[in-house]
Length: 639
Image (cartoon, rainbow, N blue to C red):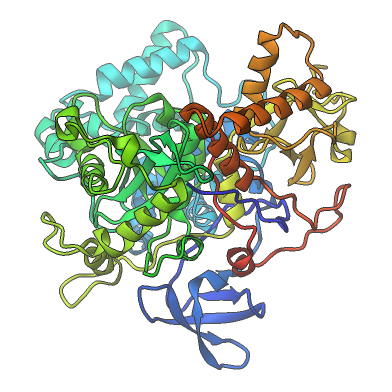
C-alpha cells in the first residue's frame, strides 16, 4: 500500500533524463550546487567519493545528491509523452533501432559506427548525433525530432507502396537465400516499376527492413536453429539475463490473507499484491499493495516503485535493514493480461528507455520466475493469523476471518521486513547464494567477474511518476474543463479557452489525474511546458477518490436523479460516508469501503505551495535530496 507522491513544491517542469554514474564524469552536487568529479564507488549502499573541481577537496556523498551536468539542454523534449505525435515517435523508434547495437560504450569506436552507418544507409555523423541525443536523456525521447512540419508527401507511403514493400520483405528478404538489404531495395524498385508505382526512397525501405526483429530474421532466413538457441529459454532460465536489471518480471496476486480494518479490527477481505523481481538476482525491485483489484495503474506504480530508491519506504514503515535496489531496467517482462497491454503504459516505458515485452503464448517458462517467487511469499503468509491458505484442502476447518488480526498497514510492514531481512538474505537454491549476494556480484563484480556498475537513476522523480499517471485529453471551455461530469477551473486555463487548430476544430489538451484524489487534475501547458494543478470549479466540493465518485453517481442513479450538480454530489458523498461509518462495525463490505476511503484520504495529492494562482514567469528547481526528506513525498495507492 503506497501513498500520494506529488511533492508540495513540485515545480511542474518535466525532466526525463537519467543519472548515469561513471568514474571521472562531472556532476553537480545538489547540496551546494558545485561541480564534482566522481572518484570512487564506496559500497553498494549508494555512497561515492567525489572531488570538488574548484577546491580539489574530496568528500563522501550519496548518489541521490548528484545530478547530471547539463550542456545544450533540449527544451523541445521537455514535454508530456502524450504530446509527442505518433509520426515523430515512429521516427524516434526508427533511429533507436539503427543505433541500438552501438549503445554499449565499447562499441563507439569509429570502425563500428562506420560499419553500422553503411548497413543502415545513413551517415556516420547522423549515427554519432543520434547516439549523443539518446544518451543525453537515456531515452528514446531524446531522439524525437524538433517539429518542423511535414512537406506534402514527404516520407509517407501510399497504401499500395506500403503493401509492395511489406510483400517484398516477406517474400524476398525473409528467404533462406538471405538476400542483402541492397538487393531487397533493388527488388522493391523493380516491382514498383512493373506496377507503375513510384518507388519509396532507399532510406524508407531500409527502415522497414530494420523493423524486422532479429528472431524473425534468423528464423525465416534459414537459421532456425540459431534463432532457437538464442531466443528459446531453457527450463528455469531466461534468455539474455546477464546482469542486474537486464530483465524484471511483474505479476499480480490476491494475498492469501484476510486483513482487518484499522478502527474496529474486523475482517474486510484480501488485499492484492503486484510484485516486481529482477530475474538475474531474484531481488525484489518493487511492489504495489492495494485493496483494489489489479489494474493498469497497479502495474505503472509498481514500475515506478521498482525504479526509485527505497530508503524513505523503509523509514515510513519503521523497518530496519537495507534495500539498495533501484534504477532503470532494460526490459520488463509481463503476461498477456489487459492491464499490461495499455498503450499508455507501453509508451511510458519506451520514453524511459524500457522495453515492455509480453510472455509468448504457450510458453509458461517465461513467467515461471515471478510465479515461483509469489508462491514462496504466499507460503510464508500461510504462517500468519488469518491466512486463507492456497486451497480448501490446506485450509480444512481453519476459520480465516475469525483468526484475522493484521491491518493493511501492519501487513505491509511485515511484507517489507520479510523481503529485506529474510528473502533477500536467504540462499536461493538455483543461484547457490542469496539474492543480495548475487545482486552485489552483478553490480560490483569480484576477481572472477566484471560488474555492470551502478544502476541508472531518473534525473527527476516527479517526471517519472507523472509519466505513469493516467492521462486524459479534453477541450477547454469558458467554464473550464470537464472530466467524468466534474468541472475543473483555474486561471491557468484562460488563454486556451475555446482554442482551435488550423482546421477550425476544437483543440484538445492534456490532463493527468490521480484516481485516489480527483479533487484536482494536472494541466500540461503546451506553451510553457509546465504542469499546473487545476482544482474543482466548485470549491465547496470535498476531495474524493474516483472509486467514491463512481459510488456517488450510482447512488444518484438509483434515486433517479438524472441531472447531477455539485450540491447533489456533495450531499450524496456525505450520506454515503455517513452510512459506511454507521454500518462499518456490522458488515465486512462497509468496513472494506471505509478502509479504502481512509487509504485514499492518506494518499491525496498535495498542491504545490510554490505554484502561484497564475502562470509563473520563472521556475525554481527543488533539489531531489529535499524531496526524499519531505513528509509530503510519499508513494501512492491508485485505484
